Length: 391
Image 1 (spheres, rainbow, N blue to C red):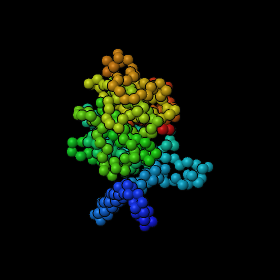
Image 2 (cartoon, helix red, strand yellow):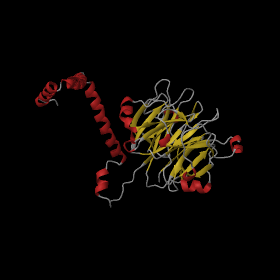
Image 3 (cartoon, rainbow, N blue to C red):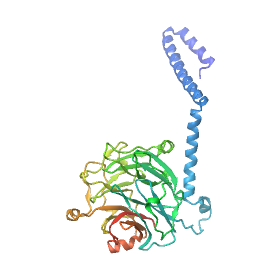
Image 4 (cartoon, helix red, strand yellow):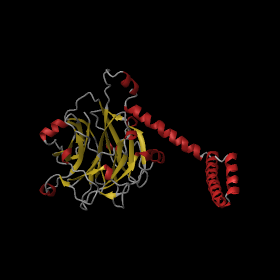
């Protein structure tokens, strides 16, 4: 602040030392320029407030801040405080849902209690054609209290609770053509991925993967803008490549891509760029079938359409920066030539469970320890999709 005393000092300085005059004038001019710029900012701020643009921005921020604790509250069944106050209390059993979905936006949900140890048993048999233009349906396992993010090929997103999808009863034989469409794709776009996002407030990045193995990361500090604008971006360099999957990652995580032809690459999240980059060099007929973050202490289970598995420890995965390389071969070229293809992959623990969808419409649950011991599951024709959930 320029006080009267300060002005008197400058006048006295100019009188005693006239050569200081230009320097004092320069200082005053710079100060006036700064004050003018600040005045312009305040004027624009007032205009924004008067036109309600700034109010709308503040409302969006408040909505986003309210949204995050609400998602976390649902994730913990609304019992966060009691869980902290009563550490000796018996934890509430959280049910889990298996979601079956396809590119047309159809979603079927089957709910099961986490208290029931899943056995190799069929929980449903879907009726109708399970493929759309050679694109098979996909599976997702998530707590029934989760919040979901739907990603479309256009880069558009939508959100909704797991519980917002009507639950089908185990043992039913639902007609796939009549499955609910909770978030309908717009003209010219397809639903490519559904992601649980309750952890969004405690993660560092969104990481996108495309069908052709391109990746990019986006800081979750952009989540407010992304969710309010309902747009994340397609994450591809050029057609015919298209968006495939999305994950939430911490800065020290790895990100794994597995291709249909049985090639794997593990990427260091810290070294991933914010722009789209090719992470794995795929043959023209190959494409990504799984993209996920391997959890510590779990191993890698890759499922093929024949029901046979490939099992690897996460310690054997050499995380690296994205580069144009073919990746680790998970099985021999002779098996590849014989038509063996990957249909899914996940990071699993022995006490976890898995779900598989088959060409006869059967949706099955399995114990991971049983799968690992047998080295395979019954294909029931062929396996179309595979996912795993925590035990």
